[in-house]
Length: 160
Image (cartoon, rainbow, N blue to C red; front, side, top):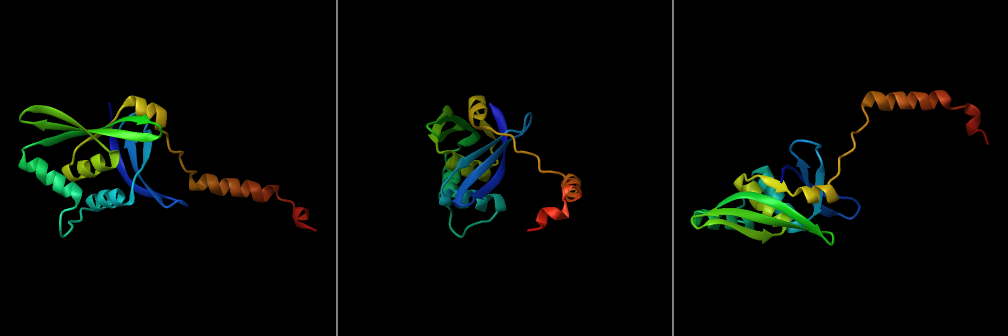
């Protein structure tokens, strides 16, 4: 298992499809982008912002149910990628022992944010779907590339 950090929720342009973005906490800094639904994106974003809705959202309700039954969410694990669909498990500690419950990654992450629970990804999932974000060019590099372009331009290139 590889520990992941929740980077946030983004909207893919031009499709306007929300996705949750996770980044490997250590090591190669691989990232996972997981497409999610609009309500789940809102639930995650609300929790990340620390906003308290007037009435509990579904994930808040689940957190309260866990508290009421003295169950603790120990970790969330993104377990597999099958047919372009991600799967996750909730690992719960209860009086009867450890319980593992299958969940959609978006719901699992929304609950993890509310309970400050670590998120992990299976190494096989990262090997298949993980990517390393390209480093943006340094501003000085961009300026230097532009200067090289200007130096190589011949005004005659623009004559008709």
